[in-house]
Structure formats: C-alpha cells, structure tokens
Image (tube, rainbow, N blue to C red; front, top):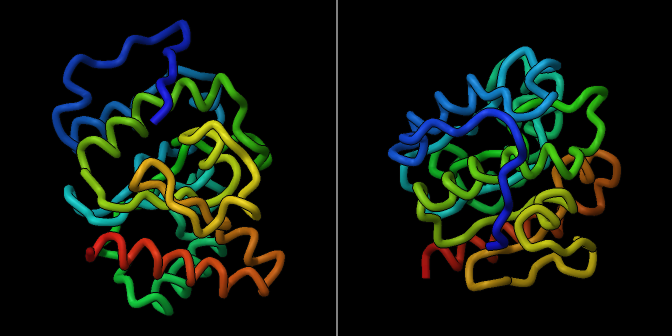
Length: 194
C-alpha cells in the first residue's frame, strides 16, 4: 500500500488502531477535513472483525450519509445483487469507502480529503486482515494503488491482495458492466478461499 501523509489539523487518537470499534469511534467524531461539516453521519464501514474479503468504494452517498452505513442506496442494491450472483454473503465481507463522509453533491473526493481519511482505511485493512481487497472504481484504485483506469486494470491482482473492478454505481449507468463486476468478485472469492 502507498503511504499517505497526514494533513494539518486534528491529531488521531492514540488508540484508534487498537480495534475496529475504537477506529469506528474515531471516524464518527473525525474533523480532519471539511467534509465533517457537510455530513449527517460519518460512515466508518461494517462487517466482521476478520473478513477474507474487504470491499472499498469511493465515498458515502445520500442514503449512506443518512444511515451511517455503507452501500445501502441504489449502488448498494447493485452490490448486493452482484455479491449474491458470486455466492458471497454480504455479512461475511467488510465494506468501507476511501473517504468516510459524503462529499457535497456526491462529487469525487479531493486529494486532501483522501489523505485525511487514509490512516483510517489503512488501519481497517490492517485490522481486518483480508486475503482479498476489492477496489471498486477509480477513486479507490487511485487512493490505494496510486493508478487509475479501472477498465484496463480490472480483474488483475496487485501486490498479492488488491483487485480493481468497477464501482456498483457504474453498473447503474451501464448494466453491461455487471457481468465483469461479478467475475471480479469471483476472482476475489477464489483468492480468499485459496
């Protein structure tokens, strides 16, 4: 994983890496970037403390901001359908986003916002200890691997555990991408089971 650097401002609590619970509490009270001013609820992520598969999206949308949970809106329905088609139980994966607060008007997260949240995502990956990390969309791929171009990168495994694929929101815009997303989830499932 790339190493992000912390922005100026609030220091992270010293115990935020002790458990997913302490990490979630730190995320819910975070004011490291201006997105804290826009959010209704921060969205730390959810799933088992240990999961073979970890999914990373871009940022919470309107529904996620209201619920405080990842992928509960229309893109979440697509994700649930794709997970089901791949034979993966949502309850057995950890789901999070690059940034934990909704950007205004669902715009793409800015570099400073990604950097502010980077320690949280890095800690989630360390604590969950997944065998496969699925980077859904360009924002997640850029944040973790520092590369873009999901269309050309998808389906390939990087650094032994990272797999780039389409974001479920892309499937909402182009239903033809669903088959590729399911295929990539199957690759991750095979890696996690192997």
